[in-house]
Length: 411
Ligand code: NDP
Image (cartoon, rainbow, N blue to C red):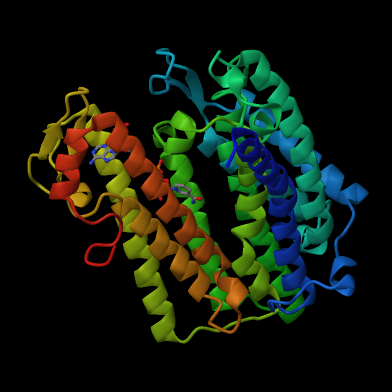
Protein backbone atom coordinates (compact mmCIF):
# COMPACT_ATOMS: atom_id res chain seq x y z
CA UNK A 1 0.00 0.00 0.00
CA UNK A 2 1.38 3.44 -0.91
CA UNK A 3 1.88 6.03 1.85
CA UNK A 4 -0.76 8.33 0.37
CA UNK A 5 -3.32 5.50 0.15
CA UNK A 6 -2.60 4.62 3.80
CA UNK A 7 -3.09 8.27 4.80
CA UNK A 8 -6.39 8.44 2.90
CA UNK A 9 -7.64 5.30 4.61
CA UNK A 10 -6.69 6.73 8.01
CA UNK A 11 -8.56 9.95 7.22
CA UNK A 12 -11.56 7.93 6.11
CA UNK A 13 -11.43 6.04 9.42
CA UNK A 14 -11.38 9.29 11.42
CA UNK A 15 -14.25 10.76 9.40
CA UNK A 16 -16.25 7.54 9.87
CA UNK A 17 -15.83 7.79 13.64
CA UNK A 18 -17.52 11.20 13.72
CA UNK A 19 -20.55 9.66 12.01
CA UNK A 20 -20.62 6.07 13.25
CA UNK A 21 -20.10 6.72 16.97
CA UNK A 22 -23.09 9.07 17.38
CA UNK A 23 -25.14 6.74 15.15
CA UNK A 24 -24.59 3.93 17.70
CA UNK A 25 -26.09 6.08 20.45
CA UNK A 26 -29.14 6.83 18.29
CA UNK A 27 -29.47 3.18 17.38
CA UNK A 28 -29.34 1.88 20.96
CA UNK A 29 -31.64 4.51 22.42
CA UNK A 30 -34.20 4.11 19.61
CA UNK A 31 -34.10 0.30 19.87
CA UNK A 32 -34.72 0.62 23.61
CA UNK A 33 -37.43 3.28 23.40
CA UNK A 34 -39.33 2.11 20.32
CA UNK A 35 -38.46 -1.56 19.66
CA UNK A 36 -38.64 -3.05 23.12
CA UNK A 37 -34.85 -3.40 23.28
CA UNK A 38 -34.72 -5.70 20.24
CA UNK A 39 -31.78 -5.82 17.83
CA UNK A 40 -33.51 -4.56 14.68
CA UNK A 41 -32.28 -3.67 11.23
CA UNK A 42 -32.80 0.09 10.87
CA UNK A 43 -35.28 0.82 8.09
CA UNK A 44 -37.01 4.04 7.01
CA UNK A 45 -39.45 3.87 9.96
CA UNK A 46 -36.56 3.40 12.37
CA UNK A 47 -34.92 6.56 11.08
CA UNK A 48 -38.06 8.61 11.73
CA UNK A 49 -37.39 8.09 15.44
CA UNK A 50 -34.15 10.11 15.33
CA UNK A 51 -35.33 13.08 17.37
CA UNK A 52 -34.38 16.70 16.74
CA UNK A 53 -33.25 18.83 19.69
CA UNK A 54 -36.06 20.56 21.59
CA UNK A 55 -35.97 23.78 23.61
CA UNK A 56 -36.17 21.67 26.76
CA UNK A 57 -33.31 19.36 25.77
CA UNK A 58 -31.02 22.25 24.78
CA UNK A 59 -31.85 24.24 27.93
CA UNK A 60 -31.36 21.15 30.10
CA UNK A 61 -28.00 20.23 28.63
CA UNK A 62 -26.59 23.75 28.48
CA UNK A 63 -27.78 24.37 32.06
CA UNK A 64 -26.17 21.12 33.14
CA UNK A 65 -22.88 21.80 31.42
CA UNK A 66 -22.78 25.38 32.74
CA UNK A 67 -23.43 24.16 36.28
CA UNK A 68 -20.54 21.72 36.03
CA UNK A 69 -18.17 24.43 34.76
CA UNK A 70 -19.18 26.69 37.67
CA UNK A 71 -18.75 23.86 40.19
CA UNK A 72 -15.36 22.93 38.74
CA UNK A 73 -14.27 26.53 39.29
CA UNK A 74 -15.96 27.29 42.61
CA UNK A 75 -16.72 24.11 44.56
CA UNK A 76 -14.33 23.57 47.48
CA UNK A 77 -11.46 21.17 46.90
CA UNK A 78 -7.72 20.76 47.12
CA UNK A 79 -5.16 21.60 44.46
CA UNK A 80 -2.77 18.80 43.59
CA UNK A 81 0.01 18.23 41.10
CA UNK A 82 -0.44 15.66 38.36
CA UNK A 83 2.16 13.10 37.30
CA UNK A 84 5.05 14.48 35.19
CA UNK A 85 4.00 15.27 31.62
CA UNK A 86 6.10 14.16 28.61
CA UNK A 87 7.57 17.67 28.48
CA UNK A 88 8.77 17.24 32.07
CA UNK A 89 6.50 19.66 33.94
CA UNK A 90 3.60 18.96 36.26
CA UNK A 91 0.11 20.40 35.84
CA UNK A 92 -2.11 21.35 38.77
CA UNK A 93 -5.64 20.05 39.17
CA UNK A 94 -8.46 20.96 41.54
CA UNK A 95 -9.94 17.86 43.16
CA UNK A 96 -13.48 18.93 43.99
CA UNK A 97 -15.46 16.23 42.22
CA UNK A 98 -17.11 14.89 45.36
CA UNK A 99 -18.39 18.37 46.22
CA UNK A 100 -19.55 18.84 42.60
CA UNK A 101 -21.37 15.48 42.78
CA UNK A 102 -23.07 16.32 46.09
CA UNK A 103 -24.13 19.80 44.96
CA UNK A 104 -25.36 18.53 41.56
CA UNK A 105 -27.51 15.85 43.20
CA UNK A 106 -28.77 18.47 45.68
CA UNK A 107 -29.73 20.84 42.82
CA UNK A 108 -31.51 18.01 40.98
CA UNK A 109 -33.46 17.01 44.11
CA UNK A 110 -34.39 20.66 44.69
CA UNK A 111 -35.59 21.15 41.10
CA UNK A 112 -37.63 17.95 41.17
CA UNK A 113 -38.93 18.50 44.73
CA UNK A 114 -40.09 22.03 43.91
CA UNK A 115 -41.86 20.83 40.79
CA UNK A 116 -39.72 22.91 38.39
CA UNK A 117 -38.53 19.81 36.57
CA UNK A 118 -40.34 16.43 36.51
CA UNK A 119 -38.24 13.51 37.80
CA UNK A 120 -38.90 11.68 34.54
CA UNK A 121 -37.53 14.53 32.41
CA UNK A 122 -34.52 12.64 31.04
CA UNK A 123 -36.65 9.67 30.06
CA UNK A 124 -39.31 11.91 28.50
CA UNK A 125 -36.68 13.88 26.55
CA UNK A 126 -34.22 11.07 25.90
CA UNK A 127 -34.31 11.16 22.08
CA UNK A 128 -33.83 14.95 21.84
CA UNK A 129 -31.21 14.86 24.60
CA UNK A 130 -29.10 12.26 22.78
CA UNK A 131 -29.17 14.40 19.61
CA UNK A 132 -28.54 17.64 21.50
CA UNK A 133 -25.54 16.23 23.37
CA UNK A 134 -24.05 14.74 20.20
CA UNK A 135 -24.34 18.10 18.41
CA UNK A 136 -23.02 20.17 21.31
CA UNK A 137 -20.04 17.83 21.65
CA UNK A 138 -19.19 18.52 18.00
CA UNK A 139 -19.19 22.25 18.77
CA UNK A 140 -17.11 21.76 21.92
CA UNK A 141 -14.67 19.48 20.08
CA UNK A 142 -14.17 22.21 17.47
CA UNK A 143 -13.26 24.68 20.21
CA UNK A 144 -10.98 22.15 21.87
CA UNK A 145 -9.33 21.42 18.51
CA UNK A 146 -8.58 25.14 18.00
CA UNK A 147 -7.32 25.49 21.58
CA UNK A 148 -5.25 22.31 21.30
CA UNK A 149 -3.68 23.42 18.01
CA UNK A 150 -2.58 26.66 19.66
CA UNK A 151 -1.07 24.78 22.62
CA UNK A 152 0.36 21.76 20.76
CA UNK A 153 4.01 20.76 20.93
CA UNK A 154 6.05 20.60 17.71
CA UNK A 155 5.50 16.83 17.53
CA UNK A 156 1.74 17.19 18.07
CA UNK A 157 1.55 19.83 15.33
CA UNK A 158 2.57 17.21 12.75
CA UNK A 159 -0.87 15.52 13.04
CA UNK A 160 -3.18 16.23 10.11
CA UNK A 161 -6.18 18.39 10.97
CA UNK A 162 -8.72 15.55 10.82
CA UNK A 163 -6.60 13.30 13.03
CA UNK A 164 -5.98 16.23 15.39
CA UNK A 165 -9.73 16.89 15.56
CA UNK A 166 -10.68 13.27 16.25
CA UNK A 167 -7.75 12.00 18.33
CA UNK A 168 -6.74 15.35 19.81
CA UNK A 169 -4.50 18.24 18.87
CA UNK A 170 -2.78 18.43 22.27
CA UNK A 171 -2.42 16.29 25.38
CA UNK A 172 -3.90 18.77 27.85
CA UNK A 173 -5.77 21.68 26.25
CA UNK A 174 -6.36 24.25 28.98
CA UNK A 175 -7.77 27.69 29.66
CA UNK A 176 -5.55 28.77 32.52
CA UNK A 177 -5.91 26.07 35.17
CA UNK A 178 -9.16 24.78 33.64
CA UNK A 179 -8.15 21.44 32.14
CA UNK A 180 -10.70 20.33 29.52
CA UNK A 181 -9.71 16.67 29.57
CA UNK A 182 -9.86 16.35 33.34
CA UNK A 183 -13.15 18.26 33.44
CA UNK A 184 -14.90 16.37 30.64
CA UNK A 185 -13.65 12.95 31.74
CA UNK A 186 -15.08 13.28 35.20
CA UNK A 187 -17.85 15.86 35.56
CA UNK A 188 -20.61 16.42 32.98
CA UNK A 189 -20.69 12.74 31.96
CA UNK A 190 -20.10 10.69 35.10
CA UNK A 191 -22.46 12.70 37.32
CA UNK A 192 -25.10 12.87 34.60
CA UNK A 193 -25.02 9.05 34.34
CA UNK A 194 -26.15 8.84 37.97
CA UNK A 195 -28.96 11.36 37.44
CA UNK A 196 -30.10 9.66 34.22
CA UNK A 197 -30.46 6.41 36.15
CA UNK A 198 -32.52 8.28 38.78
CA UNK A 199 -34.80 9.63 36.06
CA UNK A 200 -35.24 6.14 34.58
CA UNK A 201 -36.15 4.75 38.01
CA UNK A 202 -38.70 7.58 38.38
CA UNK A 203 -40.11 6.73 34.94
CA UNK A 204 -40.55 3.10 35.98
CA UNK A 205 -42.29 4.25 39.13
CA UNK A 206 -44.57 6.54 37.12
CA UNK A 207 -45.44 3.65 34.79
CA UNK A 208 -45.91 0.80 37.29
CA UNK A 209 -46.30 2.50 40.67
CA UNK A 210 -43.17 0.79 42.03
CA UNK A 211 -39.44 0.50 41.44
CA UNK A 212 -38.43 -3.12 40.80
CA UNK A 213 -35.57 -4.66 42.73
CA UNK A 214 -33.56 -5.04 39.50
CA UNK A 215 -33.85 -1.30 38.81
CA UNK A 216 -32.95 -0.49 42.42
CA UNK A 217 -29.95 -2.81 42.26
CA UNK A 218 -28.47 -1.48 39.02
CA UNK A 219 -28.95 2.12 40.18
CA UNK A 220 -27.21 1.33 43.48
CA UNK A 221 -24.34 -0.57 41.80
CA UNK A 222 -23.67 2.26 39.40
CA UNK A 223 -24.07 4.93 42.10
CA UNK A 224 -21.39 3.10 44.07
CA UNK A 225 -19.12 3.15 41.00
CA UNK A 226 -19.61 6.88 40.42
CA UNK A 227 -19.24 7.86 44.09
CA UNK A 228 -16.14 5.67 44.40
CA UNK A 229 -14.71 7.36 41.32
CA UNK A 230 -14.96 10.76 42.97
CA UNK A 231 -13.75 9.56 46.37
CA UNK A 232 -10.58 8.41 44.61
CA UNK A 233 -10.49 11.33 42.19
CA UNK A 234 -6.75 11.84 42.72
CA UNK A 235 -6.09 8.40 41.24
CA UNK A 236 -7.54 9.54 37.87
CA UNK A 237 -4.44 11.64 37.40
CA UNK A 238 -2.30 8.54 36.92
CA UNK A 239 -4.67 6.78 34.48
CA UNK A 240 -3.74 6.11 30.86
CA UNK A 241 -6.18 8.71 29.49
CA UNK A 242 -4.84 11.59 31.54
CA UNK A 243 -1.19 10.68 31.04
CA UNK A 244 -1.05 9.55 27.43
CA UNK A 245 -4.24 10.26 25.48
CA UNK A 246 -4.53 13.54 23.55
CA UNK A 247 -7.86 15.28 24.08
CA UNK A 248 -10.05 15.54 21.00
CA UNK A 249 -13.48 14.55 19.71
CA UNK A 250 -13.05 10.86 20.57
CA UNK A 251 -12.39 11.27 24.28
CA UNK A 252 -14.69 14.29 24.57
CA UNK A 253 -17.55 12.43 22.90
CA UNK A 254 -16.81 9.26 24.89
CA UNK A 255 -16.95 11.14 28.18
CA UNK A 256 -19.97 13.34 27.44
CA UNK A 257 -22.19 11.12 25.28
CA UNK A 258 -21.09 7.50 25.54
CA UNK A 259 -20.69 7.33 29.32
CA UNK A 260 -23.98 8.89 30.46
CA UNK A 261 -26.24 7.61 27.67
CA UNK A 262 -24.78 4.17 26.94
CA UNK A 263 -23.71 3.12 30.44
CA UNK A 264 -27.30 3.69 31.60
CA UNK A 265 -28.78 1.29 29.03
CA UNK A 266 -29.64 -1.35 31.65
CA UNK A 267 -31.80 1.11 33.62
CA UNK A 268 -33.34 2.31 30.35
CA UNK A 269 -34.37 -1.22 29.45
CA UNK A 270 -35.78 -1.80 32.93
CA UNK A 271 -38.12 1.23 32.72
CA UNK A 272 -40.61 -0.80 30.66
CA UNK A 273 -39.48 -4.21 31.97
CA UNK A 274 -39.86 -4.16 35.73
CA UNK A 275 -37.78 -7.30 36.25
CA UNK A 276 -38.19 -8.75 39.75
CA UNK A 277 -35.14 -10.81 40.63
CA UNK A 278 -35.54 -13.86 42.89
CA UNK A 279 -33.56 -13.75 46.14
CA UNK A 280 -30.88 -16.16 44.86
CA UNK A 281 -30.24 -13.95 41.82
CA UNK A 282 -30.23 -10.83 43.95
CA UNK A 283 -27.63 -12.37 46.29
CA UNK A 284 -25.57 -13.70 43.37
CA UNK A 285 -25.48 -10.32 41.63
CA UNK A 286 -24.59 -8.47 44.83
CA UNK A 287 -21.76 -10.98 45.41
CA UNK A 288 -20.49 -10.62 41.82
CA UNK A 289 -20.63 -6.83 41.88
CA UNK A 290 -19.02 -6.47 45.30
CA UNK A 291 -16.29 -9.03 44.53
CA UNK A 292 -15.60 -7.11 41.30
CA UNK A 293 -15.59 -3.83 43.15
CA UNK A 294 -13.18 -5.21 45.77
CA UNK A 295 -10.72 -6.46 43.13
CA UNK A 296 -11.02 -3.26 41.06
CA UNK A 297 -10.57 -0.91 43.98
CA UNK A 298 -7.87 -2.80 45.91
CA UNK A 299 -5.83 -3.50 42.74
CA UNK A 300 -5.87 0.19 41.77
CA UNK A 301 -5.07 1.28 45.34
CA UNK A 302 -2.23 -1.24 45.69
CA UNK A 303 -0.45 0.23 42.66
CA UNK A 304 -1.27 3.81 43.59
CA UNK A 305 0.03 3.43 47.16
CA UNK A 306 3.01 1.35 46.14
CA UNK A 307 4.13 4.08 43.75
CA UNK A 308 4.19 6.60 46.63
CA UNK A 309 5.56 4.21 49.30
CA UNK A 310 7.17 0.97 48.11
CA UNK A 311 7.49 -0.32 51.70
CA UNK A 312 3.80 -0.18 52.61
CA UNK A 313 2.67 -3.79 53.27
CA UNK A 314 0.35 -5.49 50.80
CA UNK A 315 -1.79 -8.29 52.20
CA UNK A 316 0.29 -8.10 55.40
CA UNK A 317 3.68 -8.53 53.73
CA UNK A 318 6.38 -6.29 52.41
CA UNK A 319 5.78 -5.83 48.64
CA UNK A 320 7.99 -7.60 46.14
CA UNK A 321 8.96 -5.64 43.06
CA UNK A 322 11.23 -5.50 40.03
CA UNK A 323 13.53 -2.51 40.01
CA UNK A 324 13.65 -1.30 36.41
CA UNK A 325 16.62 0.35 34.71
CA UNK A 326 14.26 3.30 34.00
CA UNK A 327 13.98 3.92 37.74
CA UNK A 328 10.32 2.88 38.29
CA UNK A 329 9.46 -0.21 40.29
CA UNK A 330 7.10 -2.88 38.98
CA UNK A 331 4.97 -4.40 41.70
CA UNK A 332 4.85 -8.20 41.81
CA UNK A 333 2.81 -8.56 45.02
CA UNK A 334 -0.92 -8.47 45.67
CA UNK A 335 -3.16 -8.40 42.58
CA UNK A 336 -0.24 -7.27 40.41
CA UNK A 337 1.42 -10.64 41.09
CA UNK A 338 -1.72 -12.57 40.09
CA UNK A 339 -2.53 -10.86 36.77
CA UNK A 340 -1.07 -7.89 34.94
CA UNK A 341 -4.44 -6.15 34.93
CA UNK A 342 -6.60 -7.60 37.68
CA UNK A 343 -8.09 -4.10 37.99
CA UNK A 344 -9.69 -4.66 34.55
CA UNK A 345 -11.04 -8.01 35.74
CA UNK A 346 -12.80 -6.32 38.67
CA UNK A 347 -14.27 -3.70 36.37
CA UNK A 348 -15.55 -6.41 34.02
CA UNK A 349 -17.15 -8.37 36.86
CA UNK A 350 -19.08 -5.28 37.89
CA UNK A 351 -20.12 -4.65 34.28
CA UNK A 352 -21.42 -8.21 34.01
CA UNK A 353 -23.41 -7.86 37.24
CA UNK A 354 -25.04 -4.66 35.91
CA UNK A 355 -26.06 -6.32 32.65
CA UNK A 356 -27.40 -9.42 34.38
CA UNK A 357 -29.88 -7.33 36.40
CA UNK A 358 -31.94 -7.16 33.18
CA UNK A 359 -32.25 -10.96 32.92
CA UNK A 360 -31.28 -12.47 29.59
CA UNK A 361 -34.20 -11.61 27.33
CA UNK A 362 -32.43 -9.03 25.18
CA UNK A 363 -28.94 -9.07 23.68
CA UNK A 364 -28.78 -5.27 23.77
CA UNK A 365 -28.83 -5.27 27.57
CA UNK A 366 -25.36 -6.90 27.37
CA UNK A 367 -24.16 -4.05 25.23
CA UNK A 368 -22.07 -2.51 28.03
CA UNK A 369 -20.31 -5.72 28.97
CA UNK A 370 -19.54 -6.61 25.33
CA UNK A 371 -18.15 -3.16 24.59
CA UNK A 372 -16.16 -3.20 27.82
CA UNK A 373 -14.52 -6.59 27.10
CA UNK A 374 -13.40 -5.26 23.69
CA UNK A 375 -12.20 -1.97 25.19
CA UNK A 376 -10.23 -3.48 28.06
CA UNK A 377 -8.68 -6.34 26.06
CA UNK A 378 -7.52 -3.77 23.49
CA UNK A 379 -6.34 -1.41 26.24
CA UNK A 380 -4.40 -4.17 27.98
CA UNK A 381 -2.62 -5.03 24.71
CA UNK A 382 -1.81 -1.38 24.12
CA UNK A 383 -0.56 -0.91 27.68
CA UNK A 384 1.53 -4.06 27.38
CA UNK A 385 3.19 -2.72 24.20
CA UNK A 386 3.74 0.62 25.89
CA UNK A 387 5.38 -1.00 28.94
CA UNK A 388 7.44 -3.38 26.77
CA UNK A 389 8.83 -0.41 24.85
CA UNK A 390 9.38 1.61 28.02
CA UNK A 391 10.91 -1.06 30.27
CA UNK A 392 12.44 -3.53 27.75
CA UNK A 393 13.97 -6.57 29.49
CA UNK A 394 12.57 -5.51 32.87
CA UNK A 395 9.05 -5.80 31.46
CA UNK A 396 9.93 -9.20 29.98
CA UNK A 397 11.00 -10.31 33.50
CA UNK A 398 7.70 -9.07 34.90
CA UNK A 399 5.73 -10.85 32.18
CA UNK A 400 7.60 -14.10 32.84
CA UNK A 401 6.72 -13.83 36.55
CA UNK A 402 3.11 -12.77 36.00
CA UNK A 403 1.84 -14.79 33.09
CA UNK A 404 -1.83 -13.84 32.99
CA UNK A 405 -3.00 -10.61 31.43
CA UNK A 406 -6.49 -10.17 32.96
CA UNK A 407 -8.16 -13.41 34.05
CA UNK A 408 -5.83 -15.88 35.79
CA UNK A 409 -5.98 -19.35 34.22
CA UNK A 410 -7.83 -18.13 31.12
CA UNK A 411 -6.32 -15.01 29.58
P1 NDP B 1 -3.72 0.99 34.91
O1 NDP B 1 -4.20 1.72 36.13
O2 NDP B 1 -3.80 -0.48 34.94
O3 NDP B 1 -2.24 1.49 34.67
C1 NDP B 1 -1.34 0.90 33.77
C2 NDP B 1 0.02 1.51 34.04
O4 NDP B 1 0.47 1.14 35.34
C3 NDP B 1 1.12 1.03 33.11
O5 NDP B 1 1.16 1.79 31.91
C4 NDP B 1 2.36 1.25 33.94
O6 NDP B 1 2.63 2.67 33.94
C5 NDP B 1 1.88 0.93 35.34
N1 NDP B 1 2.09 -0.46 35.70
C6 NDP B 1 1.80 -1.59 34.99
N2 NDP B 1 2.11 -2.70 35.67
C7 NDP B 1 2.62 -2.27 36.85
C8 NDP B 1 3.11 -2.94 37.99
N3 NDP B 1 3.15 -4.26 38.06
N4 NDP B 1 3.56 -2.20 39.03
C9 NDP B 1 3.51 -0.85 38.98
N5 NDP B 1 3.05 -0.15 37.92
C10 NDP B 1 2.60 -0.85 36.88
O7 NDP B 1 -4.46 1.48 33.60
P2 NDP B 1 -5.74 2.31 33.20
O8 NDP B 1 -5.46 3.75 33.34
O9 NDP B 1 -6.08 1.77 31.83
O10 NDP B 1 -6.93 1.85 34.18
C11 NDP B 1 -7.24 2.44 35.44
C12 NDP B 1 -8.62 1.96 35.89
O11 NDP B 1 -9.62 2.59 35.09
C13 NDP B 1 -8.84 0.45 35.75
O12 NDP B 1 -9.45 -0.06 36.90
C14 NDP B 1 -9.79 0.32 34.58
O13 NDP B 1 -10.61 -0.81 34.73
C15 NDP B 1 -10.56 1.63 34.65
N6 NDP B 1 -11.10 2.03 33.35
C16 NDP B 1 -12.46 2.21 33.22
C17 NDP B 1 -13.02 2.59 32.02
C18 NDP B 1 -14.50 2.78 31.89
O14 NDP B 1 -14.93 3.12 30.80
N7 NDP B 1 -15.28 2.51 32.92
C19 NDP B 1 -12.17 2.85 30.82
C20 NDP B 1 -10.77 2.61 31.07
C21 NDP B 1 -10.26 2.24 32.29
P3 NDP B 1 4.10 3.30 34.28
O15 NDP B 1 4.51 3.93 33.00
O16 NDP B 1 3.80 4.32 35.36
O17 NDP B 1 4.98 2.22 34.74
